[in-house]
Image 1: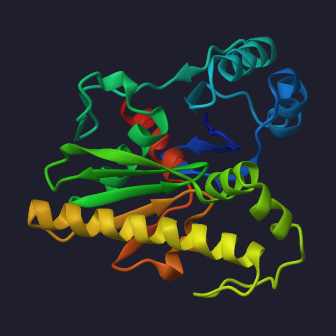
Image 2: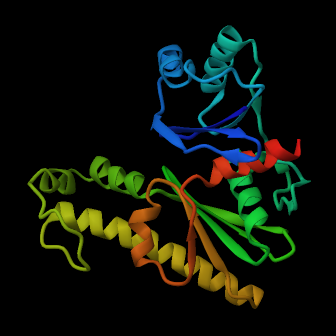
Length: 251
């Protein structure tokens, strides 16, 4: 069994890979560095000891060190942390310094390419929103990074006293095209900002390339965005873990 772990900015996701098949994905809020022992013990000590631990980590070195210490103590296994490469698993990285592409974005591109051999825009709607375009030959053409929906909302509340005070009042509890209170206005405005940006980027990029891009979307806000997005999308909630599974099977 191989344990696959995705340490994001807000959550940790994991799944076990056995004989080429992934078990159901599990997730929880990401622990603080000093809480990893309790978190990992609750999440994984009941598992059979894995032969390998493959990790995608975008949450910093302290998180990696905490996981490594626990795995060495519990199973005497050194976790393997993926980094982006210039070319691997059918994907050519566009970054001039390949390893600077986020490990989560790299894993997402690998997973998308393994499933669909066509021009794609891979969208990860999490703490930040990332978009990466890959052509039908597996060549990554680059990407963009936007603030996530919750990050936009926090920015408005933290940087504008008037908006923050007005938003303290109870909201109507629904998002419509035009809101009638400040809280709903923030929620709806930031949601539509994300939707408009994603739609426009995909439209403009497809036009520049002369192809129709298919979207692949993942991340915690994917289900919220999907009903409002134009064009065809594949929703893959565990895209990063799927990418780790591809890497694990081919290593």
